[in-house]
Image (cartoon, rainbow, N blue to C red; front, side, top):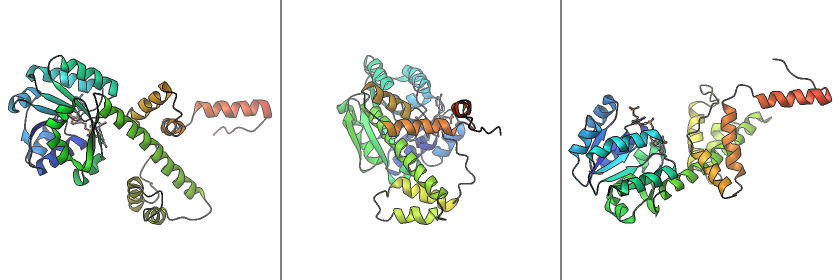
Length: 298
Ligand SMILES: NC(=O)c1ccc[n+]([C@@H]2O[C@H](COP(=O)([O-])OP(=O)(O)OC[C@H]3O[C@@H](n4cnc5c(N)ncnc54)[C@H](OP(=O)(O)O)[C@@H]3O)[C@@H](O)[C@H]2O)c1
């Protein structure tokens, strides 16, 4: 098939190369001309603007957005609209909020433009081993562009999961689960490190990856990280979040679903960004006030 990829960062470039490997015709656009040139060198067709991309694609056009969630997606759709005609399909493969995806699908439907929200998992490894895709939107449009999903995904690694919003909703919860799993591994390894035994974390992570009940791809990645740097000395313990954990927790709150592992995982990320915390100061001050417990001043 012919597809236009917008956003050639870590994920967009991987999607492009995998589509090229699957003999699709891929036209690429990024704000950075270097990124476009790099993919053109691998067989993609370079375009110089969204308008140029729209003109080069044959109708019905398929655009795949792989850019940050929020205003960049609205801005890009807005700028694309001059080149769109009825029957064109916009696929948002980024980690957009599912409410935005429902809204965008409705707005585009009124212009007879199709919209699919696709949760993409697999990270940068998806290029090599295949991505995992959760597709929301109109089922007939899913069938229309299915060859693209077939090429991008692992065998059995893509599915139509429901109407507009369902793709990004399932990806949101997927990422919420990921938060808790990452936190669980992180805590376990810190306890091992604090223990009186001089555990070799490379050895233990490798061992656990062979038949233990906690073996997983994430644990394989932990093993790889420890193999490169057993002390993780080159990394600061500062952890960002990009929204999905907060959104999943908000869903849990809205539906009164207890989700303590997710909540604590998210809050631990916030804690990771503090050198000191005011709440800990308050705790120390109060213990000092009522019990005379000593405080540290440095
Ligand atoms: N990394 C992952 O593991 C992963 C997995 C699944 C989904 N995602 C999602 O996939 C999307 C892309 O992630 P990524 O990891 O590929 O990010 P990335 O490497 O930072 O690339 C982001 C891309 O979006 C473009 N971009 C940034 N701001 C833009 C704007 N305002 N308008 C138009 N384009 C803009 C960037 O263009 P420039 O080159 O001009 O900056 C770049 O091509 C995000 O929604 C992310 O949440 C990421």
